[in-house]
Image (cartoon, rainbow, N blue to C red; front, side, top):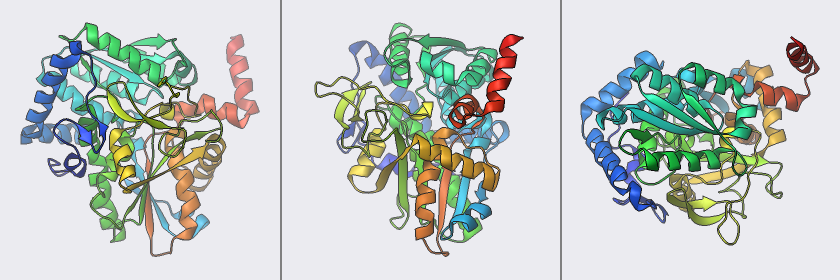
Length: 418
């Protein structure tokens, strides 16, 4: 992997953390010195070639990078049109793209002399990555997770705990990612000297969006090299799911300066964006610009600025806001954003299983939905890339329930009797 000191998203951000009108740093006074400390550490790391060398070396020998770019021959033949390639972030350590960012922030934590980390998590992939990294680096670790998400993502909770993390259920509000982030921010404000907050996505106050995008840019860098090597051309389009936005920003960063490459994000359409039960911020007319959790972006909120409840079958997309980077890129027309419903996601998930033997996370499968819709409309000379940002074994309870799998239900009943 090459040095990314000049990777594309860094050219979009102002010195005070704005991407156009989005982003910024809206924080209480108590966090000011800690954020300044983090900015100084981040800027120093950006100027230190040894930092990036250590980061990429650890990714290589501990996290199995580079992850493959897989040609999906069966899917390509089934849909016709474009050749379909899949970026396999599910093969990254702990099963998702999350470890890239976690590792980078862990190195910054060491630079700052902190001994404890905290994190929020929705689907649990960021939590597992943070817990694994904490075990390796010898850091105390606390993970905040919505009580509702704990129930539907318990396999990840199990591994977080076994890795040594304390998992704190959050019972406020809708008991999902937004509330988990609120609790993590409260914890941080009372343990500033010893603790670094590893935000899991490209949201939050500056420098988090830029910093997370920097660490996740390894995805786009690898993908660009791999598609040129395998297909001999740049892709016609790149697809990624959008929750907070870190996997999308990561893979898009490799192609931002290529205007012929369409960049397409796919949000959680839930039960339909014409209902209240979705998490579509950039693809829904019901979202509006606001300030929450330290940054300015699009949020699903009431007229008086209160955050609405969201819904998605995919816990990692069930978030009320979206990265200011993506909000800006959409506003200038560089990124297009659509939404996929829960049912469309389940249908696409089954296709991935049956056609390619792949088990994408429900989050990632949102990107497959739109790619499958578009693929037949491209020519056979075109190729498209889908970012499979995580693996789907964590979703077994949600998927088995949605599919009404009788054998799985019988299995659970039998285990309950033991």
